[in-house]
Length: 403
Ligand code: GLO
Ligand code: NI
Ligand code: NI
Ligand code: NI
Image (tube, rainbow, N blue to C red; front, side):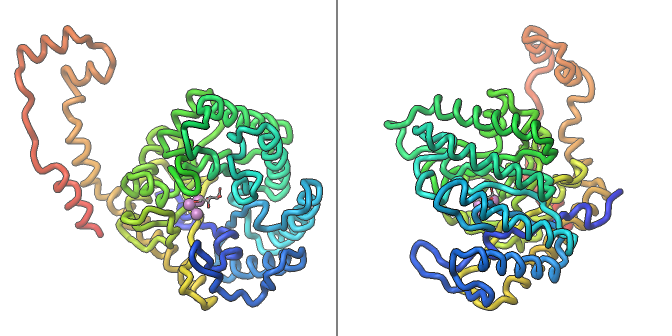
């Protein structure tokens, strides 16, 4: 299919779950032991973590990693100190990237953990907080440039509202658009070539997040004239949280040429939160890889494992098993998707389903050369359309044949 397995499957390990995850949850204290991590906020500890991370990437054979500014380097007493800490760690990251050949799929800024962001970052009612977030992103882009990030992600975890009664929605959305415009201007100014990506999520931690799902973000980007500058990073677990099928946002984003990258995880659709499980479902992986194959790959995006081992996993080897299992799942998904594409049975069935648009009145509809009067005329002389039954089962059983 014109690319190697590695080119189709641009796997990436995220630093925050794998090296900052502790197994803690809202009801429980940390459970995971990380022998290199003394739990302190020191720069030395941050360096040990980063070295351990690169050892892990190398042993796993993964070519990409991702991080937030604040998970690789400790936040200081003010922005200047935070930036200084970050510089020191980024220096080491650059060295480790060079030594190992592991590259940066994307960088991002944490604009959600610190209390200053409790009412939002770019959509905060306080302009002072907006300015802080902007300054943080400025540094984030400098770092992304320095480390050769291929993309840069914005996940607006606090960009949303808890009550409409205290929220001026329109002005918050205007501010968010301004924030992106400023980031785009700075990106161009410093010559950063990475692709900007917004990661939709409907809720958690915000009660309602503005970047609800793929179509909401696409609508936002088009409304504000940003659609040529920003694409989407789709996380299937967020898609199911929004009440959609696992593959829904991948398909929708790709249909509008907006699928930039994937946070390759999975969730249990019956749960109401983002469980960030490692993807182990072959059928889901096949559905996803089908879309990626069809659009010709994800480059410069990738399959970033935004996943965490459960708090019951105490052994280090669980981190390896989880990532290897997930990579195998996508490799099988890719092979199945390739077979489905080669066989052409499913695509022929789809083509057949739309065959009425190939000629006659359908071709005129496609070409946009018809009118309501003409269509009425067509119905008056042709009558009721025929009904086709059992469609869903027809296509699903074809897919099942491969899995
Ligand atoms: C949370 C998101 C989050 C983002 C990350 C990168 O649910 O998945 O982990 O992926 O902040 O922007
Ligand atoms: Ni994510
Ligand atoms: Ni998530
Ligand atoms: Ni996540």
